Amino acid sequence: MTRVGIVGGLGPEATIDYYRRLMQVWAQHDPSTAPPLIIDSIDVQRVLRLAASDRPALAAYIAESVQRLADAGVDFAAISANTPHLVFDEVAAASPIPLISIVEVCAEEARRQRLRRPLLLGARFTMEGPFYLTVFRRSDIEIVTPEESDRAWIHDVYVNQMIQGEFRDDTRRRFVDFVAHLRDTRGIDAVILGGTELPILLRESTIAGLPALDTTALHVDAIIARLRAPSR
Image 1 (cartoon, rainbow, N blue to C red):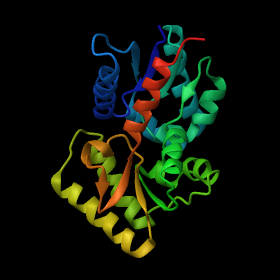
Image 2 (cartoon, helix red, strand yellow; image 1 turned 60 degrees about the vertical axis):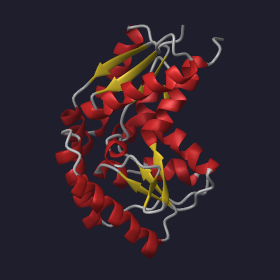
Image 3 (cartoon, one colour; image 1 turned 90 degrees about the vertical axis):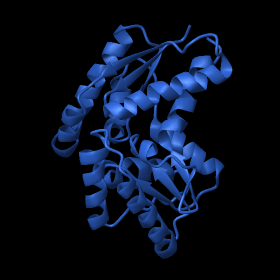
């Protein structure tokens, strides 16, 4: 049977959420079994430091995790976070197994919904990095990112609350109010939850009346589809 490897720990709460969702989605198809998977948990704080200071070292660090998964016998892998996709192309090029990109599956859903101006939320490296903009531009979809001062508070609560497992009602309300403001002032038509802790905080399918693209859910669906695909 096909087996998936998950690069996890980025952070721990998101990895738990991935595992739970993988089990739930698999059970919708075959409740008598469980999906075959292996998780290699790496250090989220090291990932954040390397994202800020040394992208080649970040790629090497994640590639080591993928290699361990390949050595353990998985057939393909996924990285359970958005920020490490800063170096997805480099990691995929060095990988002995296929990787499923969280950004590509999100872009596919945005195309399906015919979105034009989604707002991207996540850690600073995701909001400021080129990888979402590049992938979505291929479909003529314009990514909207918050202004610098807003990116600062979003990154702060992301790193110092959500990655630490703290999901507060006041933070949730602040995000909803912020999305409503950008809906009215910048014409956004959707919200990309571009951090895998964000869907734990913002669980509704809409935010301030706009569709929310839950990158964890989309990634999990793609992983399960790949697991269930006929072996070649």
